[in-house]
Length: 397
Image (cartoon, rainbow, N blue to C red; front, side, top):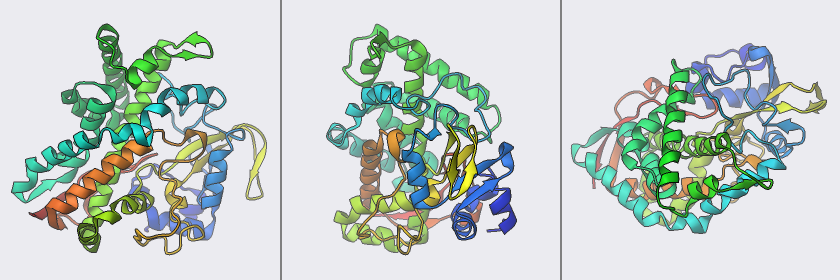
């Protein structure tokens, strides 16, 4: 990590491209130097890096609010609605969360497995004979979009690529023209909702949201848009980021796909370990509701804190040998999906996509190699982390 200790402990910038490239060494050093640090960037904010501190703050919504202001130092330009329910605190947050939770239980998403495997197979079929591909554009980005649009939203799958591009670009504050992409995403959602209202009922999560009541009143249009916005943001880019990072790991550690090819029963546990190591949801912001403290440091109402899921997931006190891949790890309480009342509602769907994808990748592709040095990959980073390109070669099996 090129950053100095002073930068880490006093000027830490979670949006820095250099941090995005070298995140885990930087966070490991920060845990060692100052597990509760304060940065002077973005008008000042605290950084939590230890597992227990991150988990405690995520669960303590009465002290650390997502609604008062979840962002640290930034407000996405052009985002005109709240992403619901992540930008709402309990107890009202529970009303919205109940609307969507039932559609993403393990039992509910199990019905998607056969079609998900068909989509995975079709994508691999498109590039397998070439012996090489750019993995992000050929597989990691399209898979979650195609699956989510067809199986969850009942939206035209052919529109997934454009919507995914708008969501991916808008969600990264470092990109140019984010306002235009937020506007395009919002326009698509409004048009999609109009189509759904004027079409036959599908008895799915979209119908449930459109006809919901919140605290005894009909749900409003901005609330509906906010929920669908969050479903899209959570359902597409984050899974693509994990898939890309997993492929990089498979290329750098060929013993992992070899093990999973030989022992496919290890894949579910491997998914959890890969989420811990390479989860794309790397952090979130919260705002202090009242006077409180962090590790003995006084914190005033309105001050910001950055919860580093990525750091917590490699905390040595929670995970022995935290940088090693161990599918037989006896306890893996990772925070790749967040924690507390705002924990990701779509975690079961993400697990299904990742498990099926990994099963088929290790079965059909061997001798995986990166075609560029890992240092040249580049990362989209912010609250989520996605490799910009993963060119690979392989031998078809």
